[in-house]
Length: 415
Image (cartoon, rainbow, N blue to C red; front, side):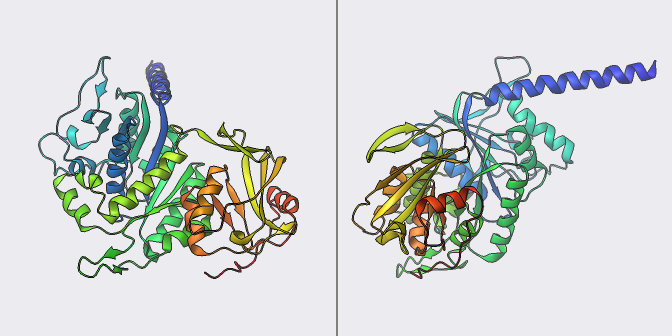
């Protein structure tokens, strides 16, 4: 009898788990983009990035949900100056997230902890996993364009639970330029690859302080580390954000107003960063397709389709992509070359080619040599860069890329 009771109890737990799985799947089906904001270590401004990202997207008219799964040290409510409580939902046992802006809503553990906001959350893994799942299944989220998930630093229970519960989430990894932070970022990148989570890209925070007296940039935490790591790991660098004292001051009082101040270098850089997020999101689904030299809109290619772009001079790879005669646009799909077109680029001026290549639908550039600034601009436009390729024909390079036999050497451009 005892064994039968235990069996029934276990079966009931299984049924409840299946029910929750179905509810999670139903909720997530109504959310277009899910972004997990994570970092390898604390103190890099991850929660601030998550908060500003959510507010900035909502100010652009997107419907945004912000889910704070940092259960031990929730920062989101204080960064936002969040007031109000979670209210009962329209369904039994469900709840509504806290409204923050007309098209932005938030859930965090702190509003559930009562009046004592300094109370420690002393939970082990299984309880934390259960709470994160409930944040999805038991919360009546609106139909969202973006769900931003703020995770604690590291690769523990919380990001792993999000990866397993939200299988189409993409990781936005926050770092600072110095090596101690970048070493942990590489662990975060390896974590994402191990759990098959797509990496949206890196954002380098605290990338230099503009002196308020002389206007020069002070590199407090070194510089360029985010770009080097993005290039080494073949991930996007979505932006570099300067260290801004007003961010710290406003964060302490829950004020997001600096996003409206275009005079700040941080605000301008952050808006460029948001541009990259929007370009990569499902809310903006059109890229360009090239047929017979004519650019026409086309939805994102499916089945793993990519467009390789190779700078060409005299029928072979040009030694410097910015001074080539033409670009070969090679569309590949399901491991095969689908089509190839040759296009003449616009006049070579700083910053023109990366935008033009993005507008033509480029996914990967295979080049001989390329300067650091050009690589950064291409990465910011969501384009992967491979340098040091041999001076072969475009078709040969494409086949080498497809067969994983492309051998690269040194980047022959040093500017």
